[in-house]
Image (cartoon, rainbow, N blue to C red; front, side, top):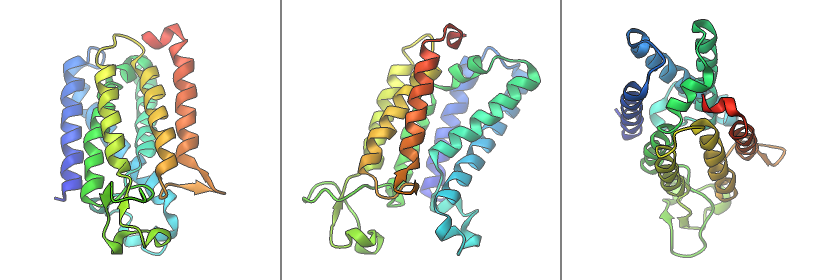
Length: 231
């Protein structure tokens, strides 16, 4: 197992244990299956987003699509995959979607904080050059062509890991609207960190991650103003 995979596994185990301790909605005899299917859906979504965002590479290397050990799990895709599963689950078993998401929301940024260290070991998710001898040193063979003559880069993965941890500490202190504040918090983190990244999914020079982050913020604000989001 790669270190990247190990960290994802640790994050999943912590998240599953947290959900089990705080879950009072899903029957205990269905809890394990729910957690497994949620994790599976999130991984599928995360990998799909990553493959789509870097299709120029994967279209020429189809055998690498399933090689998640090398990295390539998009957080936005993972989030969407998880949301779709919870929506379907809540409809089938007539459980309030927000009730489920409010249990999960506080632990998500902790998992993201842990998972970001996998980017460190894979030498990925680093940003633009710092232009001084400060930041993360990147070997020449891993530098993007446009920055081949630079040695030190913004460790965006580290910035996000720290900010995700702070968001986790904030959310576990709240008693309501955790989903809304997660969306506002993580949306804000990603929106501003996207300015430092050169490697994210773009369409016509528009960073899709930044667009999605802005949507997160808007949805979070709407939910924060909605009394039912405290369910």
